[in-house]
Structure formats: C-alpha cells, structure tokens
Length: 257
Image 1 (spheres, rainbow, N blue to C red):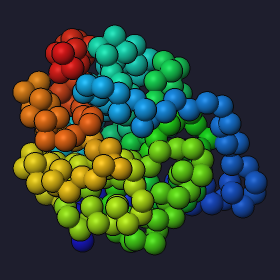
Image 2 (image 1 turned 45 degrees about the vertical axis):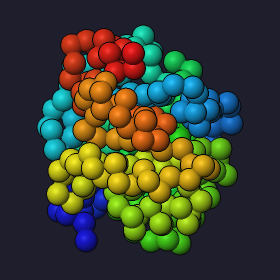
Image 3 (image 1 turned 30 degrees about the vertical axis):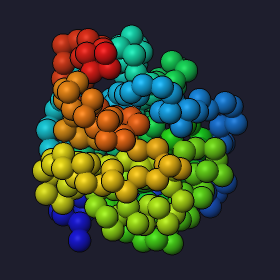
Image 4 (image 1 turned 90 degrees about the horizontal axis):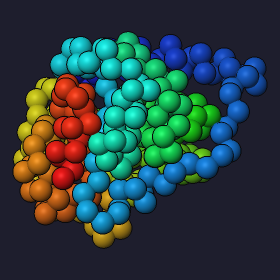
C-alpha cells in the first residue's frame, strides 16, 4: 500500500504516460539515441569506493535543497569532486527535475542514471531517447513481478542498465527474480519517509557474486562509507549531503578520500 505522497507522485506520472501514449500512437516519439553510453556497471565496479553524485534540487522529505545550483555547474563540480557517475532527478512536480538535465550531465562523459518514478514501458522508451546509461526501477512503485521483468528486459534491450531499488527482503526477491544486476538499497522507507541504516546492514547479507550493490539515503560521513564498503557495498548514491554542502565538490572529495 503506497503512502499518500508516493501515490501523488505516481498519479502525477499518469498524465506524462498518457502524453507518451499519444506520441507513440502518432509515431512522434523522439528517436532512440544510438550513440555510446558510458558503462554504468564498469564505473561502479572499479577498484575502491565509487560514489554516484546526485543532482536533486528538492524532495518531498527535505523541501528545497539547493535551488541555486544549476545542472551545468553541478556536473562540473561533481567531476572535480571525483564522482564515478551521476544520478539525476527528472521528476518535475515534487523534485524540481527535468528530463533535459540528463543531457547536461552526459556532456561530462560519465555514466548518468535517470532517477524517476518509472513503471510503464513507454517511460523506458522515453529514457532510451536520452544519453542516460542507467535508469531507476523502484520495486515499491512497480509491485508486480511480471511488469518488473518486462521493464528490466526492455531497459537492457536499449543498452540501459536497470538499477532496481529495494527496501526489504520481499522486494529483493522480486528484483533478483527479474534478473537485476544492480541492486540499490534505499535506507529511506518510502511509506514512512524515515531513514534506517540497519536496512542496508541487514540486506547486504544476501548479496550474490553476480550483483553490484548501491547504498543510498542517510550516508553523510566517510566513516559510514568505510563501514558499508567493508560489508560489501560497491557504490554509494549520495544527494542531499553533497547538494547542501558549500561547495559540493569538497564534500564529495571528503566522502571519497
């Protein structure tokens, strides 16, 4: 059962999906990008700790985080700070994102993860028209094994890595059954909007040798990164603590040192 905020976000997406359906019916979808996409898995599996720096102007739980940091500026700062990849919020209404931000970050030649609330095949097709190397699939939003399987398969068909977000053992089972190669553990419960790092401490015990795992939400200090890296996490997706730092690249360097 989705909470009211999650329901509001997914309901808002229905209008976008209807617009995509009209474009598809008239043959007017943007063409699929057929150029190179930097390898997301390769970036995460390099020796050491990989940090995915997230561009997030606002969120329902935090409100405005940093409205003055433009995407072009952030992309350059994240590179200077040593980011292995980018995560870019594209949800417009509640996170102040924009699909066009993906292009700005892709210009830095690092892998870009589209982070949004995606639960329809046409949203995958929409992503394929961008230069994104990966996209986020949230099990709490999808909640259906057959649909999750389809979205994972469709993403891979476009050479886009599906990053499957989970919060509990049941969702991990759905992700694993769908063949997800990249598992993102969100320490924030999307129903309660509370962060509990013990979620990652518990779920990482189930990691297999064929999977790459990302820890997300509540990571603010280098000591936390060191702990979770020792436990088995390959990468860390960090947004708020970087976006709110003056300047972001220094916080990023501190976390990745």
